[in-house]
Image 1: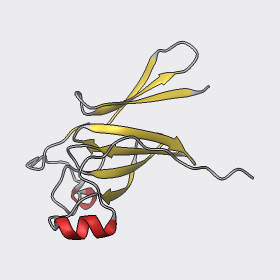
Image 2: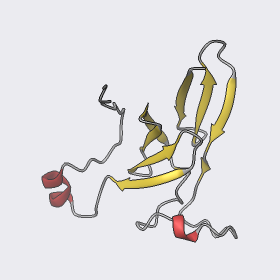
Image 3: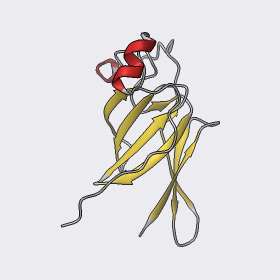
Image 4: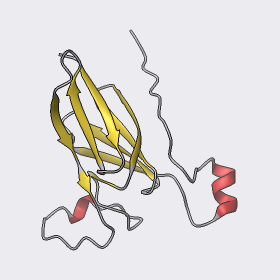
Amino acid sequence: GAHVYLADPYNHVVKMFTHADGVLRKIIGRQGSPDDESDDECDDKSDERGSTRLGEFNEPYGIAVGNGQIIVSENAGQRIQVLSLEGEPLQVIPLIKDDAAENAMTGRVQIAGGLCLEEKRL
């Protein structure tokens, strides 16, 4: 059935609810820390900017679902993560660099807000 996805910035997760009855079905992700020295073998999935690992969140804020993907903007993480509908990390898009002038010229943002996904219908 249809699902509703909610970005929960204070718990640093995305929650999936069943649309029909509002029952929580899945919690996606967990709170991350740039200093996380965990022993998992996911080092190939870390964010090259030194942020949290992919699939971990630092204040997820905006969310869009479409094309079989969940797209999550992170306010404190200053990035967008693209996940599968099962929550598997697929891609990270940094939103800010250290150079304010470059940020202004490239359209990068300081605060990641709401998202909207434009889906092509055939």
